[in-house]
Image (cartoon, rainbow, N blue to C red):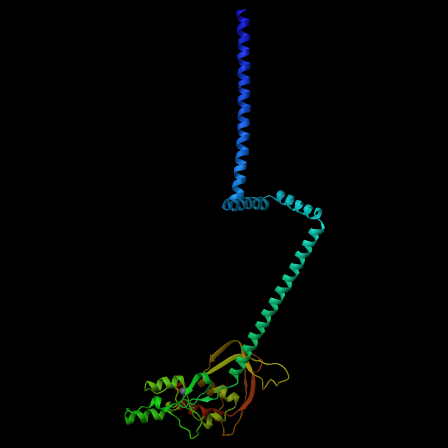
Length: 330
Ligand SMILES: [Zn+2]
């Protein structure tokens, strides 16, 4: 009996504990739900009333969604599908109207952009014409300005108007005045005289300009002995024989003789032994003796580069002149 009673009491206490537990559990869940709704209401309130919070929340959720959209292809597909469905289902009159307006706006924008581009092209062409006009103005004048000191024909931007008082002042001694005056090649014409910048600088420092005519920069006369030589004779006595490929720079109807020439590829200067060549020439019998001579690029080649009659006597005379004048032949 005692045993029975004890089990019964045990069972009773257990059920009571279970009931209490249940009650507590339901209490807790009830409490949790209450808290949840409360916090939801609080957040909703905050969202509607607090502008900062709302913006932050929006930015955060936007970021999260876009991250999901970009990283997960499944989510992307679903989003696109949903949007398509929504577009097809919502084909009401209002929406049609708004879509039409949207397309119209896009069309106008496109047109506006193309007009802007056109304006830009117009601006560019204006710039081009301006530059062309400037260029034409610059090339209107050639090298027409002659320096009074070096007599070079120069462009306008290379010369300055010549004013004698700039170079010769009152307090100069007579000798210096004479010296400076000797640099200028005075002419009788009353035209405006010009002087190049480098000459002007040098004369202001009371130095002789290096390229002044007074500096004996004249090209002297070619001696008659050298003048009468023909091409092949000149070849024979030249110290250096240049080899280059010469091409016509212009092509067309213009005769190749008159067209402008240019070199192509490498240029070789080959030193030649003049003494050797001249001593192998036959001894002239009289002054008018001519020898037929062939010039080859190399002695063992069959092809002849140039063939001409030469006068050994003339070659010898020219060499004598050169030995007297030219330091390279001494
Ligand atoms: Zn000059």
